[in-house]
Length: 258
Image (tube, rainbow, N blue to C red; front, side):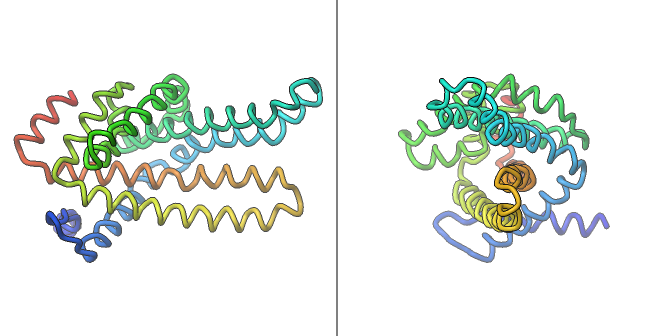
């Protein structure tokens, strides 16, 4: 069993500079997805709930509570779309941050505290939004710096919401491994997106004739089901990139994270 595990660990490989080896690229994709599933199995219900609860809340507010509010206060009818958009964005950010927190907890302790994860999301969704802007702005320092910042959300959760430190940690981890990072994240994103769209389409086609609100709410729930895989895959990828860091860089990074 131990030998088999060690062999599996060797399946993730870095792309050589300037080379596009699709055997390595798809091998890494397979490795990341399989290991993401292993992590997901540690506490699947709570991993789903951490993201699903805020997303379902957004769906309920937009589909049910907002129309009721408009009925009670007709004057805000013209703001319905804007209010719905703001509610959806805020609760989606909370769900996303909560999911990152849940994944970090699942990996480190094997258990997820849904309340703590959502609470962290509520407390840090604005900081997370700021982090997103700062990641975007790194593009002005070059595409490589921007791509190397893609793992920042994980570090943001681990360091308690410090955006600048999160970006620096991500760039340190991905330095010299940008191609491996980009290919893996893009392909995982495509796979999860396709799965989510297929499930959402099936759900919507089944239920929209019965109730449009139920059909719409189902799409939010499905996002709560597929989102964990994307985030967990980023964690798996980050762990593998860390393993392939030069000893002095890894030591420096560990010191910085501490």
